[in-house]
Length: 351
Image (cartoon, rainbow, N blue to C red; front, side, top):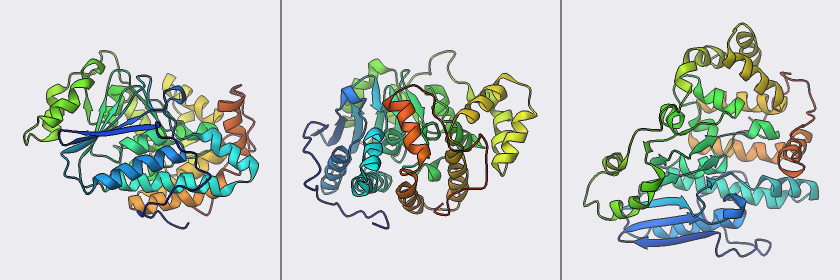
């Protein structure tokens, strides 16, 4: 498969039926899709992604006011893709299974971005990797005081996919490059500041969103959500405080310049950032920097196509296998990368 097609692909015999991985219904003209793998923090499987895509495809022929994406688990909106399964596929030599997952996921990302009906994501708890793919491409992203957003792929030998090379470079200043390289976790205030979230609603008010949308009577969705909103928790947020240093460092043209600028700064933020970048996969830093740089000139579709090409090689690399092992299998958090920290010059030509 060479590109992201919007044509739905039927489930194959190797895709296990999972009727309860999502719950979908329509109430007074508002569609609702609930992610329902609570024990797995709603980590996305191929069947789960395909089910969401099928529901959205069917609803395109139904007159709706909006579609709400939420979760049954208050701990997580979606912790990302089931990356352990991808590693198992690689170890088993089953490239087809991984190809099917990524192609299905990226097709869903594109559908969400181009959907004819407003999509409102209610992000309460973890929202990482594939969870951002479900939410950020839609028009409205509501966060609660429990929200934690991140693209943590460089820590597992992977790269920010799901079209991140499209939306991260379009965040203010150099915030996107910082988030992509470091995997920094954003709270509600930082998510709003960066533009990854559009509204804040306290968790105890999330249950009112569906009824408010159903009873909207022509009120713009943004106005309606603002009416339910409130200020983020006091003391949250931190990006604004380091924005000057962040833009100076991560606005550099190369990884070498980023490193040099960090070492010239004598601040707690710079020291902590150096430690993070020294700990993640050097291969992932190279791929991510090149991918986000190229993404500034690409459409979302082109970014998703580049993601799919890169997955075919990246998930077979020692750094990916080792990163997932250390983070999600053995959980010793001590990956042994193939190259020294901050090495440059081996970026993938697929970028």
